[in-house]
Image (cartoon, rainbow, N blue to C red; front, side, top):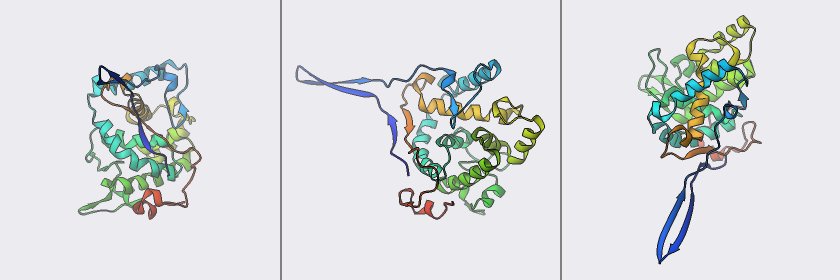
Length: 256
């Protein structure tokens, strides 16, 4: 379903000098940073808009190591992404949606005051609607594979409604009914130009920031981390008829 999940590893050269083995390790080279590089699911924010650029810089700065001060996110990504990515690819959902669990539960985890829980922070009713068991001691919101399948079903429905991946991400945060109401009220369907509540208005910016520190950790202050890049075949647009590579648990949950 997807090519091998891999790190961008540092270059290693070995020299023999005076019969001693000397290893020279070169740090990975990350490209110089510009705001133009930042995007979510191939959707970029409007260039030249000072207000939007200022907001992006502010939220991105909050994810730098000097403020966040945690390497747990990289460890969680190493564990979660190999499971999440093939499922997203199977449903034809952009790989960038893998950052939602890191934003939703990677920083804090647990159950929200409103009752949302699990990797994708589903409310109980929403979880049940998309096939998860939430009853008594059984809570499949805390099963990474099953909750990711449920999230994909939900995300795919949202894309049928909005047709824009940034609006889908915003609707995932605030709900499709509220998002549709705001689009109609503002007569605006560009997420970055909409006036939304503080949490939803910054949600996609947070996803972009999470993506940035995962893919370019060194320039964001994470000195001991390696850049994480997953290579997904671009030609994969829908569910493959051959589901052997994603495991038996995933096969039974996939939909067309």
